Image (cartoon, rainbow, N blue to C red; front, side):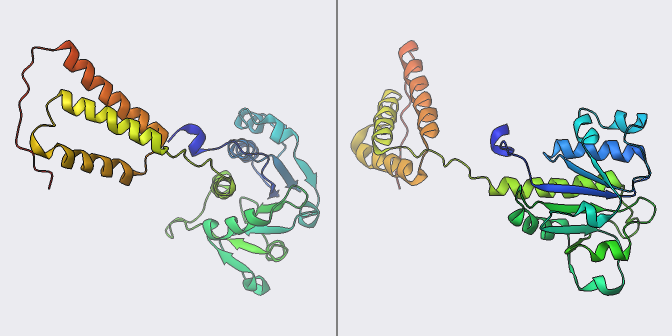
Amino acid sequence: MSEEEESPRLGPIPCRVVLVETHYPGNLGSVARVMRNMGLSDLWLVRPIARRDDTQAVRMAVHAGEVLDGAKVVGTLAEALTGCSQAAATAARVAGPVREIKKGFPREIIPSLAEIGTMERPVALVFGPEPSGLTTEDVALCHHLVKIPANHAYPSINLAQAVAICCYEMRLAWISKVPRPAPEPATFESQDQLFRHLRQALEAVGYLFGDKQETLMHGVRHLISRMGPQERDIKLLHGLARQILWYVRTHPGDPVKRESIDPE
């Protein structure tokens, strides 16, 4: 699979990343970097403790300075969610009335967000402070609760790692929405030309002899049609036939060993 097939070129992904009271500058920079890796650029900071112009933040935001510099700073989560259609909070534990919101793993929640996000009405991924996580009140403002299935023995995940996981799932969901070009099926004429070329090659090496030639070639034709080949498959097999014919022409003295062939 080519690089373009693995990760097609996407336009802007309408997803806002919201960080609440981020304490460590390195995390700010790392989040900006992973956002750029995954094709996101809309970063909002709610009451940040860390400064985005801190040396460590700038150093960790390798080639993602524009994401960090362009981050919006607001005083409340409600402000950060203004204009969004839906939001998903990330939290390890939750209590109180927010238990009624939809909960799930990133791969269960994020694709549904990708379905509804638009440039006019983006969706949001919300992450809490490193020491304590989101408050119950913050989670209550969101429509979904994302829980990353970490090891129970050590469930605490670094902020930038959590953002990376969720942004990756968002990008994956958007890639699945991009229509892929259908492979070009080989035409009947292409398949018939290949059949004739292969027949020449098989005759040249002595594979076809005796009274079973047509039976054998019927099997070859059936094999080609059953493959449902693409044009690139046809080209590959033409190359194989050409190489066989070239070898026979350049090694005229080589004996051809005929073996009993049973087409059944």
